[in-house]
Image 1 (cartoon, rainbow, N blue to C red):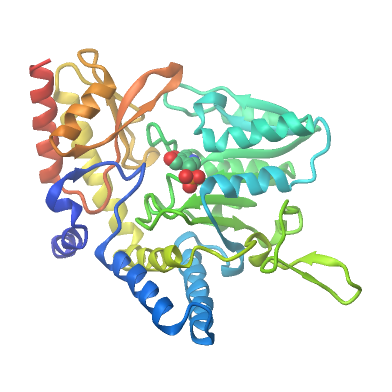
Image 2: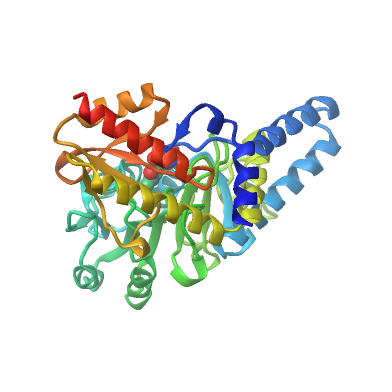
Length: 393
Ligand SMILES: Cc1ncc(COP(=O)(O)O)c(C=O)c1O
């Protein structure tokens, strides 16, 4: 059953005929069906008239359907889903939208070892609004001490906890539900960067209980670039005051005052990227049709084979936690025999695509991020190529 599905999936991703693409933590390829949905949209847009009633209704329906699919994927309510440009934009909406008081505390993990998209917005707002940032210390795998978090959460001026769900450099899964409990108990806001989790592991908003979450379309959902998803919980919708407003996100009410619309439009200033939305809707349908449990099972198998085979190679160090329950399919490794960027470039010359990233203390690693269209054969070929590169270094 799984094999039939995998055969079909491979045909849907033409890149699999040309390359061994193990870089989905950076940007995943689009399936043929998502590409078709984008071109279908553009043809309709052109043929029906971009500003026609027919197309407006179609675009409205497209947004509604995409919100519904996100709702199913992350277990939230459809009105809690706004479309942005990127994860970064979503995180900035939170950073700039809270009514900060001087001295308020933002708690985050790792400081410079957090993805910059989930670090710079907090540094920036802290500087402008005179806030304090408390950085949780991390171990070599990126985990932090939950007791330290609990202590910080109890500080009088603590206001917001920031977390990445899955770490971009080694795939470690953070304890988002436990942190949610601490945030609720201490009446703190809680925002998650889920760029590396949605589409790669189960994400359940109702269980996590966060106020805000941001993620892109183009990583593990295999959607297009140029569109991001921002979750704002109904209970926290009045806490964020957007720093922008426009025809789509606001209105003038009877006493002539200007107000923001309710969520989700509150955060959707101006037209959205509709061609990308068409692709995203299609990609979400694709992912939901396969099912997250199957995706997780495929990914956990391929990534475990990759890890287990890499371990056997003399001169390869694996980074990140081994426990399958505490990581997604990202596998990070390095070799004392060859500089990581050079290894990445040599692999690329052989048609094997990975990324180079930083670990704690600036150590450079090669990051493989397999997804559901990758298979064991590709992994074994990758292992042979790595062995060969090391033998000739
Ligand atoms: C953890 C994490 N957060 C944020 C981003 C940035 O995402 P976007 O380009 O959608 O802003 C990335 C992208 O690599 C990421 O890995």
